[in-house]
Image (cartoon, helix red, strand yellow):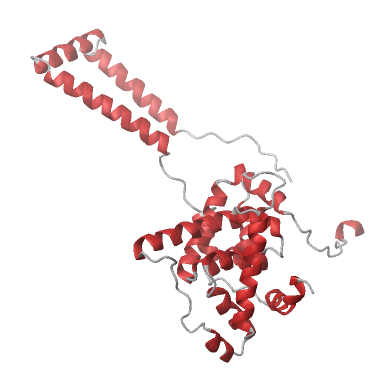
Length: 120
Length: 188
């Protein structure tokens, strides 16, 4: 007589034991947590990158702000940049404005898309 | 014309194997994952509920197991058995939950078994399935897992050993002792 014979009745009972039904809604829960889970707006590595840049920018801002005569220097630098870019001339500013508005209007235009071939 | 109007004879839907379903999921077909869930939800839930002896926790563990499997599907080894893989994930999650319970309650072995599951109470129960489930729930955790997988995995000892990360001999010993205890509880 083997161990298998000893447990023949028990094995029969186990084989006949039906599995418990999972609660209703469990499948929906699983699907919501997996396939239908919304993609995060920002990935973890992007969060780290943005955080690093923000930290660096804050540090630079603090360095600039804590420098002696920081306000005057900032005004001087801004003036010099405006002069270098020719933005102190009304004509230049107008043409820049025209260019920006033209670019915006072009970006709003829609063109008919190319004929699409439906693949079956 | 007649050929165009002819209706194809009904053909039985082909049974798609797990590997093909996994490939389909990886190719972005969400319906393939739903098919996987339909196939294994019951078995995974049963493993969790027998191991944890708590339906709410078992549902959470089942959901977490499928979530982990879904995220790691790309690393699933072709040729391996999906059932063994998902059972392994589920069993580890259940062990983590049992360990947490033990930490918080301080019990040697957390026991949420039906307190009326003693032999006398069991003998009074008419339903064989209920009696058997109650007897399994009354087993120590290590035996409970072995007997549950023995039931779920269709007596594949190697698969059970793989899920539980135990040597084959230990699985056989645990199974023998589990059966002995079950027999004592059910057939006094």
